[in-house]
Image (cartoon, rainbow, N blue to C red; front, side, top):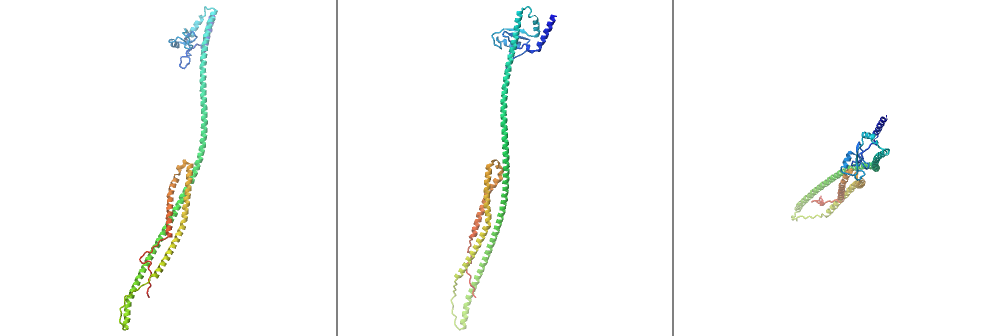
Length: 402
């Protein structure tokens, strides 16, 4: 009965030990490069005198080239090979303590318990150091994560500030774009008005040119009429002069025949008469004709001056309009320069205005040339030149004898 009870009790203890891995022996060698222990459950191993346990693989690999312990680095150590399997322990456990006295049994159990406690303390210390390393590693990773989180928070705050600034700048740029678009529309309207004014000015200039052409044609016609009248007057004067010469010649030829007939009627001998020499004083006639010509020239000059003054008065509003337009163009140029200085990024949209500014000097040159030509024309009108040329112009008329 006692043997059966002992066997059943040993079987139950073996099952309990199998259930708890904490009670088993493990290899103490730290064979990995990173310092992690082997931790293999042993059924056969090597025990050193310094109470360290190694598996067969690590013991052969180390003690084939070394004499000291790989853990405590003690001098040449003694090794004992032990079979730590549960079956051998059960076989040895039944008869291992037979024949020993109680003090020896206590001594053997003390040695066995000390070896087991040393192994578990070593495992606990090694596990504690490993866990401490893991804790320190976790702390380092936690600190790194916290620092990264703090950096990420600061970066997020900076990004939020940047986004807020960008929103504000977008709002400001939107308002600036609205203002610039309004100014652009205003400038386009001004440009359209300027184009309309230019068209009106062109129409007025064309009308003025047509008027000037008509006036020039009228003056040319008047000059042609005057020339025709002069030619007709010259022809009449020539005819009258010829008639007077013929009459004078007839009178000179008829006078000697009349005197001879009178002498014959009274029985007198005709006496030869010398050739008639007649002298005519033309000075009073020439003075009258010169006075008339001077009066006629003065009247023509007065008429030309009146016409020039009237034309100057007619063209003076046009000149005033040109001057006001020049001032407006200069003001617009100044406004455009200010606008270009305030919004340089919007200068590309003002290319038509720049072209208009480039065309303005040509318009100014055209207006200046027009003003200079008008001034010269008014000067010619105020000081006309008349020539007293002609073969029979200025000659006095002869009085016809009755």
